[in-house]
Length: 218
Image 1 (cartoon, one colour):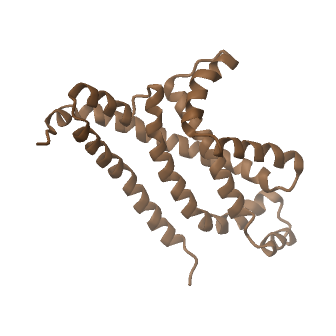
Image 2 (tube, rainbow, N blue to C red):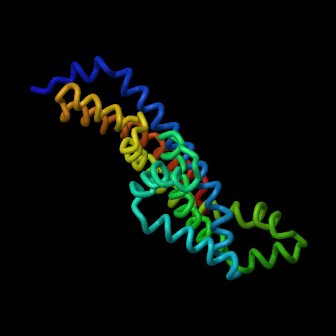
Image 3 (cartoon, rainbow, N blue to C red):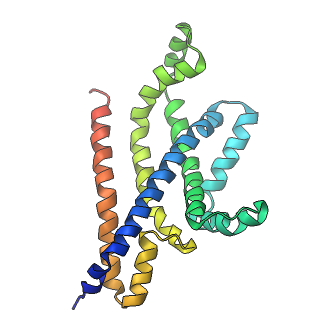
């Protein structure tokens, strides 16, 4: 028989882990989206001095495992800098920078996928590059970028579980401790799976609603 009693008795620990998971998730995604914009612009600018560093950044973070990146920032980064980040800071840094690489490609595809005529029309009106990007290009590009950004949002939520490897006391970390203490891995991880679903599913629904409201008219 299943025994969920010990799991429910320690619900406060899981709630604490869930709060830290949500904090890590939202911060990593927000930083990644923000950092990805200038990287994506540099990647699509067509200038070698900007393109090469941006391309290197993107390829390094997209072609190495996220787990390796988290461990590197927590154990190798201090050796190079003399700065020892907390486990949470290491996880946030690794997840945010990894997310920035993927978001940079989303920004690049969305912004530079807008027809050339839109850029030319803005320049003809005397708009400088940043006002042109902000008032003409981005409002159109955001509609196209919303689905891939939604997918990335969900992926970042799932990747937060990797932070348990460097002892960040998020949801998966608390679950592993509880499983070891109660010898009830089936019950513990069933509850954890449901908790991740409860956290992620509303975000998916909200993103789908926003996507429908911003959709181009038929």
